[in-house]
Amino acid sequence: MTNKNSNMITLPYKIERAAPPFAGEGLQSPDTLARHFVGEYTKRGDKVFDPFAGLGTTLFVAEAMGRTPYGIEADGDRRDWVAGQLEHWTHLIHQDAGKMDKLNFPKQDFCITCPPYMKRTDTWNPLYAGDPKYKGYDAYLRRMGTIFSKLPLVMKRNATVIVQADNIAGKTYTPLVADFIQVISKHLTLENEIIVTWKIPAPQALNPTHTHCLIFKNNKKK
Ligand SMILES: C[S@@+](CC[C@H](N)C(=O)[O-])C[C@H]1O[C@@H](n2cnc3c(N)ncnc32)[C@H](O)[C@@H]1O
Image 1 (cartoon, rainbow, N blue to C red):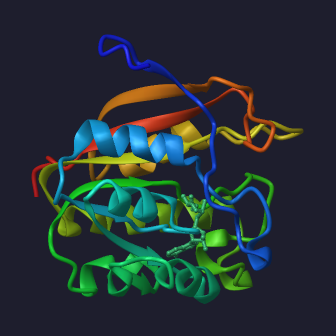
Image 2: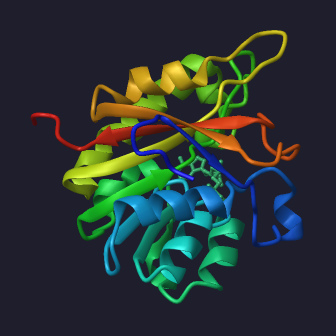
C-alpha cells in the first residue's frame, strides 16, 4: 500500500488487542500503523523505542516482528498491564519521559510514538497528569519540547523518529501537527510528513479519515 514516491499511504485501521477495562476506549494507536513503519525503517534485532508507550502497541508490534522493544509510560496501571504481556518486560519503565536520558537505555535504532494530545482550550495538562501548577496549552508545548530535547541522547545518530499527530477540530481548532513540528524541530530534523489515510473510515479514531506521521532524523549538530 506504500507508494515510495508519495507522502500518502493507505492502511487498514486495526486495533488488535482489546484495551483493559481501566483504560477505556480511544487510547491505542492502530497496530497496522506501527507494523507498517517498524517494517519500513527497521530490521530484526533493532531496538525500537516508544517514550509514551500507553497500552503498548509499538512494543507489542516490535517484539512480534523480532525487534527489541524499549519504552516509558507514566501511568503505572498501563505500564504493569503492558509489561505483564511482554517478553522484554524489564524494558518498559514506569517514569516520566522527560527522564529518558537517566534510565540507562542502550542507544535506540528507531522511535515511533504518539504523545498524549491536548486541546488549546484545556487546562488539564496530560504531560503532568493534570497537576494544576502546569495547566494550559503553553505549558504543555514547553514540556513537549523539553521531553523531545532528550531524545537525541537516547537515539543513535541518524536514527529515525516518527511522531503520530492529529489536529483537533472543534469550536477552537488545535493545530497540534504544526505545533509538534515547531517544538520538536528544535532537536530533530523534520524530513517528511506522511499522511496515513484509513482504508475503512475509522469512527474510533480522533479523525476518522486520516492521521499524520512526522518523520524526523536525529542528525542535528550538538
Ligand atoms: C496517546 S497515548 C499512547 C498510546 C499508544 N500509542 C498505544 O497505542 O497504546 C499517550 C501515553 O503517554 C502517557 N504519558 C503522558 N505523559 C507522560 C510522560 N510525561 N511520560 C511518559 N508517558 C506519559 C499517557 O499516560 C498515555 O498512556
